[in-house]
Length: 579
Image (cartoon, rainbow, N blue to C red; front, side, top):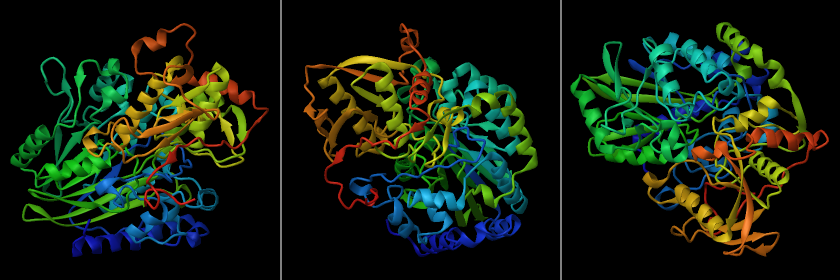
């Protein structure tokens, strides 16, 4: 992708802000650190702040970025499919800095101990208040996956996150995992908790019977005399990636034609700036930006890509800026527009890492967090084991947390093979950390947590792997239905991502022996999307199995040997971290 002179200067501006050598800051007083890192001069007359995919993490956490995020074909070497040094080089950022740690998996354990935890709503609140104070009228946009991902969000039916988001000052929101609480709960929150406070927008969600809009397609706000439209784009594949019965009366989809209609309608209503708050995933956003005219910027989520600059995409109407603000409360995107003569004349974009030890916690938000956690503290803090290895999840193929879950499911259910969904959420633990129930639930807290044990033929196992691989590597982003590759325990295989559907998976072996197409194997799994799974005899939630396994490890969990496929044709791909 070629950059114009203005875009290139914007990248340099981002690098100048984000590439601060924070080794000195970590030793400085908090107020001085805040002044250095978070003192962004205002620009223009319209400002939008963007958070996404926090996955209900109210407390500061560790979160390791992926070492594998493969881009194929035209996306090879392009954002967001860059990791490690390749990402830093593309963004003009220096290695060894705090922001390099925030954006990459490079030397993660050492850097995490040096720079500390990230995120936390009390720390994020301090940053939001600071930026809103310097940017009158600024809006805070929430890209969704906010109400799911922690024990307390599950146990409170999302109420802890709803209250926290209202206090944080969220102005506009769209969704994905929110829908897994069911249609009635979502409507209850929007109609009661959010009424008059938070606009929930999604132009691509309609009723299945008459095709009526379920939510407002967009909201129109006035910022310093400028009319700004925020159009919502909920995750288009919710009924496929998650249980259909939870959203039985609603239809989703990408819906470019309807998006164009809504954008045109917003412009006709007086909008001088039109932005999309999206949960598509960045590849889908990039394609949508090339097809729909009249959008100034897309604030994206779902794929958890922390991208430190706005990517310009040409289309029939001009240029659309595409951004993605990472996950788990690690980042806050800041978009400043200079609007003149009814159009965007210039912009500045920065992706700010939220370092918990560089931002003083906001007392009001901290009090709320303490209050909502109080009834559950004993359960959350219960110690299950100590990990001797790094535990993380994020990446195209597997992570050590996923491996632990697979190992536990195989051991407790007597399975030969285990599958764990390619979820991107889930916090990280450093070697020597205690695995508490809270940290375990960070990996497992969903509303359909049932563990399964199924007999599958070798042919069926291959079909499952091929289907998920196509969701991940289909050359058309509109056929990528979310998530990373299913995580596999016990089974080894070879993956050729550039092959066509049905030809990517080969060399499947179990204990060194080839998988036989007609032979039946015991396969453990969890998070079934079928409604009847919860009524199966003896069914238990996945966390019961994993807790049982952890308690049988004599207090310590050895480092996991991560079962990842052998990759063919990926040598030198900048989405693959060497070593």
